[in-house]
Structure formats: C-alpha cells, structure tokens
Amino acid sequence: MSHLSYIPYFSSFVVSITQKRENMCNSSLPLFLLLVLCIVLASADPYYGNSDYKPSSSSYTTTTSDTVFSLKVPTLDETTFDDLLSFGYYRKSCPQFESILHNKLKEWIKKDYSLGASLMRLHFHDCSVRGCDGSILLKHDGSERTAEASKTLRGFEVVDDIKTELEKQCPKTVSCADILTAAARDATVEVGGPYWAVPYGRKDGKVSIAEEAALVPMGHENITSMIEFFQSRGMSVLDLVVLSGAHTIGRTSCGSIQHRLYNYQGTGKPDPTIDGKYLNFLQRKCRWASEYVDLDATTPKIFDNVYYINLKKKMGLLSTYQLLYSDPRTAPLVSALTATHSVFEHQFAVSMGKLGIVDVLTDQDEGEIRTYCNFVNAY
Image (cartoon, rainbow, N blue to C red):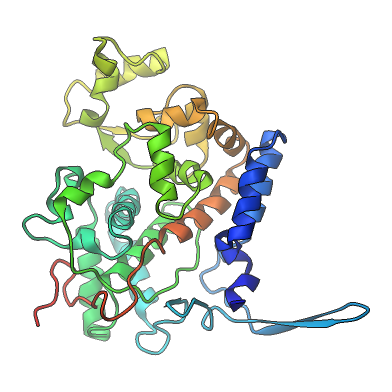
C-alpha cells in the first residue's frame, strides 16, 4: 500500500472509501449530518488555512494483544502522488517559487479584485480540457484560448507576469501549469476563501484545440450531463455541488442569461423558476448582452455560502446551478451547504485540490516546461 493511504487528505482518492461515501450520500440521514459524513469519508483537513503547515515525520505505534503496528507519517516535502507530483517538487530547484507567485498575485488583485474569480475560472477551464496542463494559455490560431467559449476568460497577464519573474530567478524550471494551479489557490485565499496545499510537477501540454473548449460547462447544461462531466474527470457529485459555489464571487455577461429572461426554451416568456423580484432586477440590468451581472446577487464580493442560500430563494443566476436545488441527486447537498459556511469552505479546499490533479502530465515525453506560457518551446 502506498504511503499516501495514510494521509487523511488523500482518503478521498481511495476507491473503497469513495464507494462507502456514495452509499452513505444516498441514505436518509438528516441533511447536515449526511453532508458531514460524506465529507469525513471523502477527506480530512487538506492542510488549509496555514501556508506554513509542514507536519514533521512521526511514528505512531498501536499495540494489540497479538500484533504491534508502526506507522511513519511523511512530511509534505516527502509526500508524492505515486511519485508523480510532490509537495516539495521545487524545494531545491526553485525554493522561492511560491513567495514570488504570492507577492505578484497579491499586487494584481489589489489593483483589480475581480481577478480572483477570473483566475479560479481560468484554472477550471484549463483542467476541464486535456487536464491541468496549461493548454488554455497557448495563444495561436485554433487554440482553446481563441475559442468562442473562452472569449470572456481573464487572468492571462497575471500568469505571464509571474512566469517572467520566475524565469529570471529559476529559468526553465517552473511549469505554466503549476503556476496557474497555484495562482488559483492563492487567488481563492486573497478573496477570502480557504488555503490548500498544492503538489507540483505538472508538465505543460503541447496541444491546444479550439473545438475542445466547447467541452467546458457554460451554465445551461442539465444535471445529468454535469454529473457525467465531473465523473469522467474522477470527481464526484459532491465536487460538482461544492465547486459550483465558486460563483459566490465573480460576474458573468448578460448575454449568457438573456435566454432565461425573455425567451426561456422558446416559450417567449421568462424562466418560471426565477424569483419574481430577482427577475425584474435582471431584466432591467441586462437589457444589453454586453453588460455584466454579479453571480451572487446578495454578497457578490464575499467568499461565503450565500450562493447556496440564493438557490433556495430561486435566485440562481445560471440555469444549471438553479437546477442543483431541484434535482434529487444534488438538492440534499445544496440544502446542507446552506447550514454553515465552514463546511462549505473546508470541502471547497478538498474539491479544488482534486480538480488540480485531473489528468496531469508528469513525464518529460508527455509535456515540457514552457519558457513562455503563450507558446510551446521552439526546438
């Protein structure tokens, strides 16, 4: 058995435990207890809230009448994902990586707070297509970045700025995929969300195809397709509901919701699931498709669980996320997440950690360390 099995954070990746979790999530326990049990089985504290957290190696001994068991707990620097990704990957080659990234990102978000949500979204789009390989950053004719689905993505200049500084300090060492993953984590923290430890060692992909950007959910899909999308990437229904909570901050273009306001499903009428007062506000706000509207109508600049409370009030901006409250497969989790912000914050860190390791490239033959994040290396 890999030593990873002994670390609480990684319990969410153990198949047997995942199966137990899914069974328990289908039970008739009270909603809050149900969510807590699902989360406990999925994961324990993912080292969030403390960027300096580094547990020392320790030995634990348990004695029974017949057997003595010893367990050595590795440090974060020692810990790897099956020897592919490691928390200490840059400890020797670029020890200043995280501090450079953190300082740069802090400067950018101080100038433009909305970049926090934009970087989280950019990371999600990257990991949704070909895994977390930085392919969304490539800028050439026919790349994901040039696709219609990517036209409102922002934050590229932040990644470029961080990469430029890292190339001065640690040339040809830190991948753009690792930069984007860590930037999404630090952006979350800067806007009031949780911290989680990010393992490193991703290689940058060499392929980026515009047509594949259409795979990314745009907020009008049904719940079945969303569940299938997440499960195909090794993630669960719980991850779907929790990561939708990223819409507690940020904005979207009015063009993405106008079909709900004026001609829902070709009826010539608004979506009947929208609260009346909220509908009136949106119709006045979104006369033009080019306008922007907050994803969370109540606390748009606070990272909290009010997003889920809004769903219960029929104030979900995107149709997919309003459906989360009415679909029996997701509604219990939405109801439970309205109960306490701390449960949402904890599980958000866990689910973002899982997102960040979707289909990563780790072999030199699979990818590269780009010198410029916008272009593949010239050999």
